[in-house]
Length: 303
Length: 149
Image 1 (tube, rainbow over the protein chains, first blue to last red):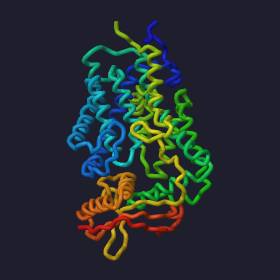
Image 2 (cartoon, rainbow over the protein chains, first blue to last red):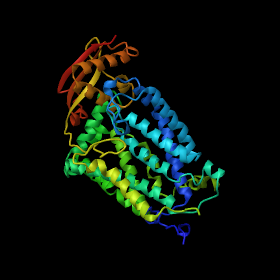
Image 3 (cartoon, each protein chain N blue to C red):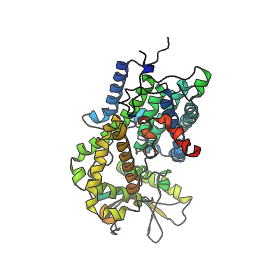
Image 4 (cartoon, one colour):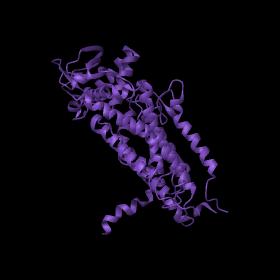
């Protein structure tokens, strides 16, 4: 029996589906993540450009740039930015994906690492960079791609389309688990029962006020009610440490993704910290039957 | 013959390897932050109510304080980046603090004629009380003051 005849489960969970997926699912995730990364870069570009004038004393390299004692020369930076845009658009369309995918993932990693090498690590970019690496190494252009038009016809559902999605989902889940674990490891149960979250939100908003940036309009109101914070902290840790249930699929996944989305919405409202990858839903696309998205979007207009 | 699937065990091995890689920053004896692999330490620490914030502000000729935007401090719109830039400069010593002060003054000169000086300082507040209306710092420890050209 070939894997192409393996039935796809009905729960929609990456585990429950035994890792078999149609090529369109992986292709849709490729399109979503690539499009997100390209649009994100367009918005982040002014901030990145502002860093090129920064003094070398501010350079605190991390990750793949950790070996650089001095800031990456602006010429190299703009080359990587151009590669990210060019290869990113090509990869989103599935054009030359075996080449453009790795170039896109590598260039995006360099650009985002550069952005995080000036004293602030932007954890909002972590998952995107990791997901792009998985997609770059996966057969993500076997459907809905320019490459497909040039070569063979439609592929059948197979594990090779499911494994990358499972891997992306596991990376997503682990990121949440690590964040939850860090809280309990660092502060113990006090993080939930004590005033840690309240103090964090107060200090974060204070920092914004002192640097002339908008703080949360709800900060004053919420911070005056200390009793609100233990339930909010418990919810946050439950979402983070409970992330593995998303791999079960079905309602477990739906409830967790909904809770995680609310968690990020709460961070936005209370701390004016924006997690666009999560709030746009793209971060969770690998957990769903993403190939149905076009039909779902078009359906209301067909009635 | 076209291979249609990745062997199951190879796939599992890859997933286990990647999972260990993602978990690696937290599995170290002393977990450390990084990019894109991180132990996600943000918001984990009990920072307490007392906030000691390294700031860069503008001073008018009458001595009043004008909060500077992250763009004037660092050239970008990121608050935390601006704050960490000031903190790193203060931690590096008077010469570095003076250098950043002059860098900010250069940016301010182009857009804010009302600001006469830049001041790098550590301001102390009760972060919760600040949002209850107590906005005067409990302490201001000045590290550098420089004129706006």
